[in-house]
Amino acid sequence: MKMVFLLTGKTDQSWIRDGVAEYEKRISKYGRLETITLPDVRNPGNRPAEWVKAREADKMLAQLRNDDHVVLLDERGKGYSTLELADWMRRTVMLPVKRIVFVVGGPYGFDTSVTARADHMLSLSRLTFSHQVVRLLFAEQLYRVLSVIAGDPYHHE
Image 1 (tube, rainbow, N blue to C red):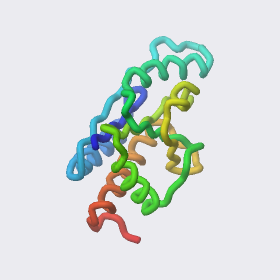
Image 2 (tube, helix red, strand yellow; image 1 turned 180 degrees about the horizontal axis):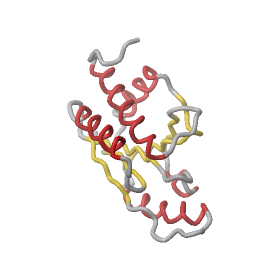
Image 3 (cartoon, rainbow, N blue to C red; image 1 turned 90 degrees about the vertical axis):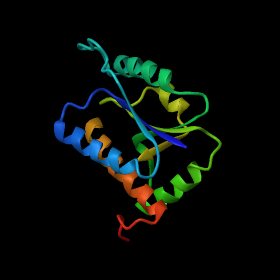
């Protein structure tokens, strides 16, 4: 199964870009990961958060296929330990879908249309992180989970 990392807006911090790139390289040992970075919403000005989320949603939904398994990274999602997430991932890769798409929203979160399309919502923590930091945290966790599944010694329990 192909994994897709769908991101809203560019990463403007080089240390985050470098960290994500490192984990993407490591993840390639275990499977195909495609990163899709959607452009920022143009000219948001002082528009309300709902307006921005709706524009982001249009771009996100345009990237999704009917047979995708869509996982939103959201603080209101289900929390897992690393081993629990590895078990979830083992089960999820067995689903009859071609891609599992992990979606990181913008700074205001997700529009209800994206939430309605999601098959699962995953929380990395009960804490709130910037949408850019989430990229790095999740890339590391995805690598960790895949190494657990493969039986590699990266994760210590």
